[in-house]
Image (cartoon, rainbow, N blue to C red):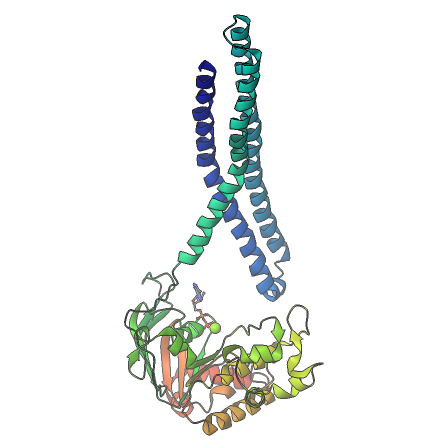
Length: 429
Ligand SMILES: Nc1ncnc2c1ncn2[C@@H]1O[C@H](COP(=O)(O)OP(=O)(O)O)[C@@H](O)[C@H]1O
Ligand SMILES: [Mg+2]
């Protein structure tokens, strides 16, 4: 009986250690996860932006960033491993002290004749049996703590709310005609109104119109058009499509009416066809080819080793910037958008191809069953000459708005852009 009490005394001791350990290990594992996240982010950024890294000769800087994230992760891992390394021997030590205790007291009791040797041996065996699972448990603590921390990180990611939320009671955007209205729109990325990226932007694009957006780098052109598919929400004011605030429209239905070719022509690993049909995987071959033709991409795609089935990306062929842009345009056209947005999508395309592209676009849009409102962000004045409306953006404000013939009369800033480009090379750049 006394031996039993002795054994019981060990249980809280071990439980206490287990508790202390898990309390200490959990935050450590969380840190390890964070460091791992950081490492992945650095790596992903480097891969996605490898051209930018190279163009600005920042390789050394990026290698340093990676190194730093890597060392941090290693240090955190070492701390956790140390803790585990201490835990297991400690548990074994306690166990064996227990065995010594039982043998010690049992031995004394045997000598004084109150216990038989057999009972003492039995007690030692019981002790081992009882404590062995506890040992195992201690061994499992590391993985359990790690799993717990991982689960928490997963939940954090799953729970993270996007900046743009679906409003309660939002409706699908039915039968959009494509009238886009910016009503005193202010926007800042930080939500802090002291440094607005867009300030008091108001204009209307009627259905079927082509709106060209001109402005210096960083003036807010991309930001402005990103508000239409609600990549971000306005800080104040409203963006309306056919009179409905985009925040009151179901995101899916809003974005499915919009075809957009981003400034960075992002292509994914896969075939050319997969990249073009990205927004409409069920499109027929004829539709894919029609979109590619309008985007002036059909001819070069045909000349690729496997035509539309050519793999692009990491293991496949490498495309030029202009080719990537044209595939991105084909992707935007294929969804038959009511609103088409091309963000500087022809910057890497030569001017002749661009003129053909604009003609083909006109024809494709004229032949479609619905009107398409176009937003074209462009550097070249030649691209914007025929637009129904030209917005000149300067530091987030509309500096001038009108047609080419109006602006050339009235807007000094437009005149300046115009003459500087005509004075430049024949390419207009
Ligand atoms: N995701 C972002 N977060 C914070 N600031 C941004 C972000 N994107 C752009 N900006 C800033 O907003 C301003 C306008 O950028 P942008 O709309 O890309 O201009 P543009 O397309 O005319 O070159 C710039 O000062 C830029 O640094
Ligand atoms: Mg831009």
